[in-house]
Image (cartoon, rainbow, N blue to C red):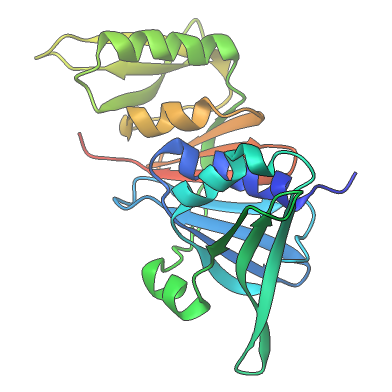
Length: 251
């Protein structure tokens, strides 16, 4: 079943703006694929996503700024039933480019235009960081129970902006362990997943708020961790595959 423009926009907003740290999106459509890129202002999270089916209305490269405004239009009761939500294009330097999204209610008496950012501006504002890839030492599919346990632990250590990740061997089996605090503070740790394949020889730190926000998204979630200091959380929403890459942080 073909997804509507509203479905696609809601999916993108839910996986960017709704997280609270991805304020702007870059759309690139080429060779029959539609890519969605974003980055946190502090570079704590880099997003690279691809829709499962190309969005034909998205042509070329453009930006989606002010995602809070787009989110409001999508939630507006006027646009919930039989509304027209269309991508509008214009000729620019001999090329057809999307310029904005036009929202219009069923009666035609309530309208809004959400304006895109042109290619030159979005490429200046958000230079795409090419992730060179990593050797993923540990790869898991986190359970809902593990994510709930992380919430409990982080609530007990809400003064800690980061948490540590390592593997610990018990009885010849490696467990993936998350820890908060250190010897000079209140401290806690728990097994996030038992019996993982692979080991981590370094202990790296990652931001609590960003990791939890991504883990709270709905969809199929895979977490990959590299001993080189990178974490990738992949969320498949059914419409797109979103790769959230988090460089390790120094504590």
